[in-house]
Amino acid sequence: MNDIKKLQRKARGERPVFFEDPNVDKLISMIMGLAGEVAVLHDRSDTLERLLQTKGLVKQSEIDSFEPSIQVQGERASWRKNYLSEILRIIESELEGQKSGDREPYEKAVKRVETS
Image (cartoon, rainbow, N blue to C red; front, side, top):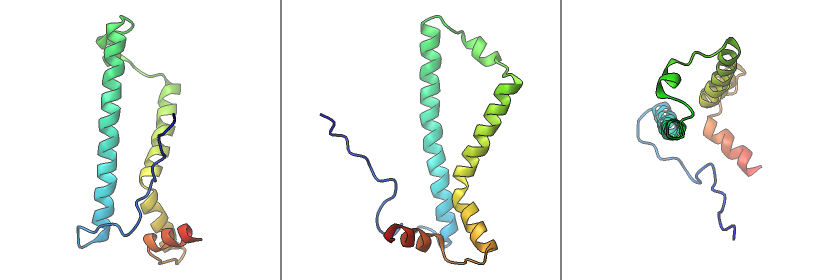
């Protein structure tokens, strides 16, 4: 009964280019990916807050006035660092390639790895 198939994380074929500078396309792609994630997180957070209030477990004022402990702040900072690293991965890998003298474009490198 498990008819759900795993979707590929990467589309096949050449990526469409909309702007003269391919870096603008990469940036737009990153921004749109983030916008989608923020929308999903907003909806989930809204659902959780509404369920907690409906069940009388938490009041909106408690959520609004919550002040995280030093430990929670540290955990959140660590999560943000990893999160931003993942978002900026494409830029970081290109910068690392430039520093090491590897000037091969990112897309060619991905294709080479995929076909290996």
